[in-house]
Image (cartoon, rainbow, N blue to C red; front, top):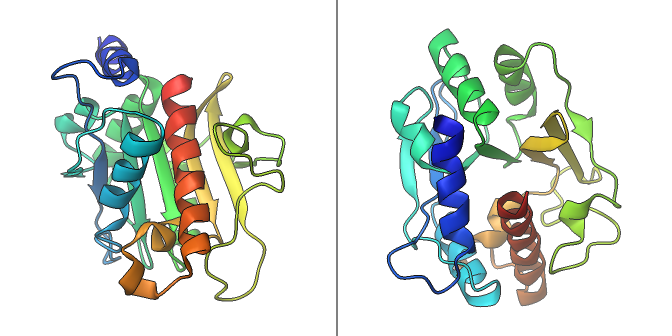
Length: 217
């Protein structure tokens, strides 16, 4: 039933221009003390970019929800970011697993500092699955916008190369983890980080690819 419910949202998303069919996406609020609320302008800006350039029909205001709530199943795409600790309770991990198995999608964007915590907590969700690094040839880098070298680097920080990882159920990617890239900072308002316009555009194009890939699966 949950899978059918999420499929309806995907169909509505693809009905470009349909009346009263706007899909809503969500930011996930987690426990553990990390700043789940980081980058408050990033998702609204990404939504506006996608609605303009992909002609999608996403509600301009993302929701904020907790991981363990039944309302999670109302959103076909959910996003996690932050710099610090993340803790999933057993019931939250079970709820997130059911959501992902039922057709939902999780994007985790490391804002620098959540790597060890996310890797630990996702094992509660899928103890038998590994994060698989995505090669530059993966379709997510070749949607409307082409990223022939894979995930772009938006903020340097420690100068390590950007990496994208996926978790798969069968052939379907249910979780994308973007590491050492900081896409969300590039999605924020221009005056937050004072990034050059071309850097913000690169981040938004990669974000648009993620959205297009998820709803095209």
